Length: 327
Image (cartoon, rainbow, N blue to C red):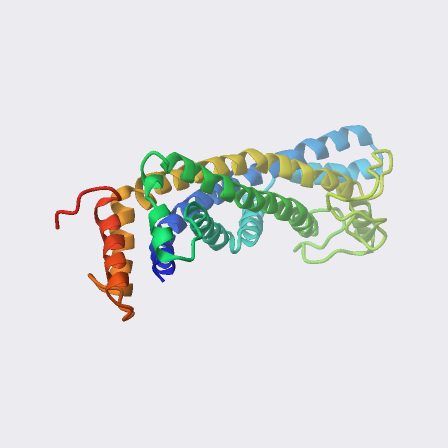
């Protein structure tokens, strides 16, 4: 049927733009990831430093104060190696959180473009009625409408990707940070061996206060942790890390909002100036129509009526409906 042929040609034409859309998605996503990896580690380090220094001042000169002083000194003079470990951890969690995002957004943009175009075509089963009601006004005065419709359809999936990135990074990254801190402290607290490879029984007690030993009471740096009792000396590191997920979540928000808006602008440009450019669209669809039915006939052996109708369809995409045919 001519209707099915036209719809199939339009779908195949839209598929040819998949790679161009994917380039925009990948470029925006990679830029966002690079900015996060560049800035989030410093944000985390500054957060740890400020809270450890505050805890140290509040602890006085008792045993816990000595331990916190060791941790605070570590945070104040964090080695480049430790900072690099945080940066690598950031990259790991951001990469993991964005797996499959490029393909998902690209597939959604192409799919919703097909849905939007199909919604503008009449669903008459009769080929002649379908053709009579079919026009390409969405390439002219109707272009803004169809582009806005597509953008409206793809914004929620893009927002969903942004939210998932925030949730995944903010929930998993703090646990990794805790492991890095405890590992780095293994050779720096009083009582550890010279090489920093072992922790004796006394240090196990210290680590319990930090939330990393066998006697810790709970809390693992999740956003959904237990009560944050600042008056309790036990697990003070966990209590600090308990605040970190929300801080990361809030920190990521402007980066991902910028990602959403930048990507929407780029996809809008692609839709306006390439995909629904009248010249691109007509030539692209026409090439598929010719493949389906030949340059002058329907290709299905149905007779002169169908061939004439198919010829009119080709004329529509060659010049535009209503133009005089002077071929």
